[in-house]
Image (tube, rainbow, N blue to C red):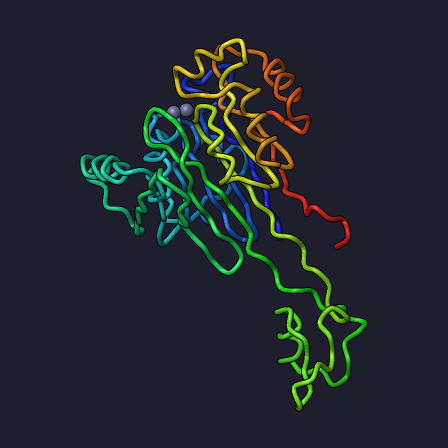
Length: 310
Ligand SMILES: [Zn+2]
Ligand SMILES: [Zn+2]
């Protein structure tokens, strides 16, 4: 199953140097998700050929404009193009009122169902799940209520070793083996031991999105062991005081969070307009957490399986 994160926007409060406000496009199997939707997101979606006809769920971290001012524009276009039946939006209290009032005064009656789900920045919360995936929100430390998002695959069934399938295996036996059970004979004794006929499945992968937040070790418990972590890095360490004052993080702090969480890879973004060049941020982060990359717009990060055995 594919699992990728495409960067649509990487700029902090003000767009600068052709960098756009925060937004990311996730492709997980056949599903598409948008995480944050700053101003200009529609244009970025078009530029990078992201097909919004498949988009059913949008996650908004908080109500600072650089994370959602593109939402009404995107909703309006989705209405215009009649692409979908329903759209789920997950975000903080107040977002539904904001959208509804814009629709009301433009006399727009959407041709799809808009469903709001309020997020709560006070603990881990399951927002969405299906047979393959769970999406959670978790609290961040910012000036207004703000959550990060965790996308985690569900454990897969065990893999049957085809060469070892026995002629008397029934379909039920195969299903049981996939569930990790042994196959028993009529008297209840083990006839075929699970470990002889199956191997471990590919491990579930996970991605965490840490939008605006001050450095906060409490985040670590929510994102422990993720394969890929996005964490804001608005400033370099030179502006650590400013970061604290504005409830943002430095590149070194983002890297420290990744290190403490045991993340496999880190992407840093939400760059301040102070930083024309991003290399100092990258170097600063890599000193603490070597496997760090910049959130370069248009770039796609694939989540690989952690073992090469499959
Ligand atoms: Zn922001
Ligand atoms: Zn913010």
